[in-house]
Image (cartoon, rainbow, N blue to C red; front, side, top):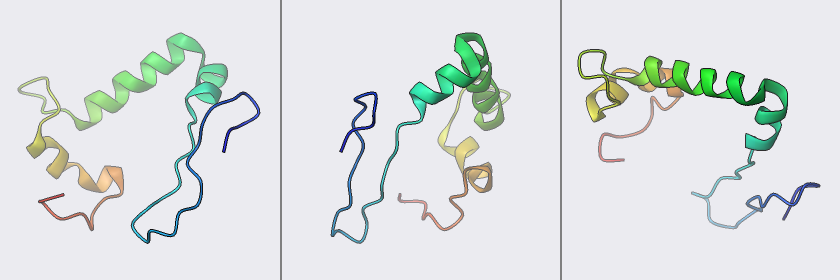
Length: 77
């Protein structure tokens, strides 16, 4: 399946573990502009990173898993 602008999107799949993905990148670029989009990426990085290391680490992701809405994800995932 493709959008009006030709962007590919996932379609329905019988696999119960499958989820639909819609690419919002083009609309985010239009709405935010390049500078606004980069600012959003930087804020997301700062939110998830280990402030001492300046990196997004496994442990910093575990600490911030609620921000991502992934509380039910197991450590092995």
